[in-house]
Amino acid sequence: MAGTSVFATVVCVQALRVGQKIGVFPGGRVIVAGMKVSVKPGATTLLLAIDLVGTGLFAAEGASVAVNARLDLLGVLVLAVVTATGGGIIRDVLLGDTPPSSIRDWRYFFTALIAGAGIFLVHSATHFENLSLITLLDAAGLSFFAVAGAAKAVQFGIHPLLCVVMGGITGVGGGAVRDVLLDRVPMVLRGDVYATAALFGAAVTVICLRLKLHPAIASSAGILCCFGLRMLAVHFHWNLPGAVAANPA
Image 1 (cartoon, one colour):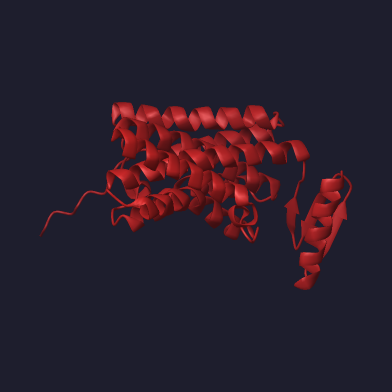
Image 2 (spheres, helix red, strand yellow; image 1 turned 90 degrees about the vertical axis):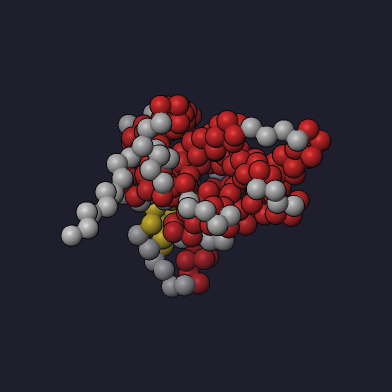
């Protein structure tokens, strides 16, 4: 209850600074200019855990891609951090949760740096390269981030459809920025089932939460659905329909 009170006080102060109307109700529910935030300590802890696991997985995947691109240590760490935090930063900015979580909480950058440095050291010692491992890490990171993004959006009380979109953005945002830095077409824009898997996992999470299932069950279901669809798409080479060029006249 103490943590909820502190959160409510901070939200009220921030809202008053910009002249927003606010309301604080028992149980930690805060409404700021039409935005509802439901604060549940257990759910918040679960969301943080999912976010940090996703951060580590995506950082390892980003670092692995950087190693394969023959970048130096700094380049590897930069790509690890960008891949791990990019999607979450975009999500938080869109939700109005600023500064973003990965900037407010040092654990995000620390987790990303440790994962990136670990991948670099392992590769330097063993020269181990495995594209299948990169795909696995990417699918796992995508799953955790899609669920984390959707769950956080649900806490902010926005429309369920937009919660699904926030989950998709969280899942693919960091990878898109990484691909741009590497001067290649972002994976989200390619034909294979990637963003679709993130949206699917986010949708499953939102539906489970709307059905009042326990957050741990909802999150697990979303992660498994996203990961399963992504790996099936990789194995069977599933692709979304592509645009067909028009025949010249």
